[in-house]
Length: 102
Image 1 (tube, rainbow, N blue to C red):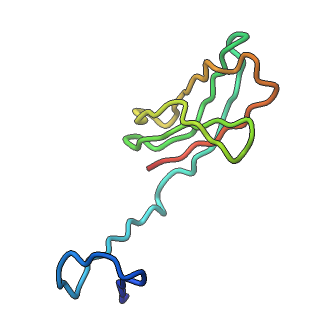
Image 2 (image 1 turned 120 degrees about the horizontal axis):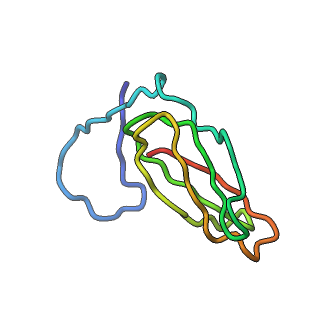
């Protein structure tokens, strides 16, 4: 694989290096992120359970209007399942969730 780096906007060039290192991480053995359970704990709290891979960090995000996502909680999985709690559901007519690993 060849990687070519350029400066199309003519900005600052930090040094004269001609090579770069690209690291590709193979995630083929990773567990797909999936909501396995969603339950209402109280009038203002929802519990969401994700299938996870031990040792990986995950973030739960929520929105009521798809352009604006808010991070609710970030945790590192210690088992194959991770629970998140959203304490901000009171007053929301509808709320959507997504999760990601980084």
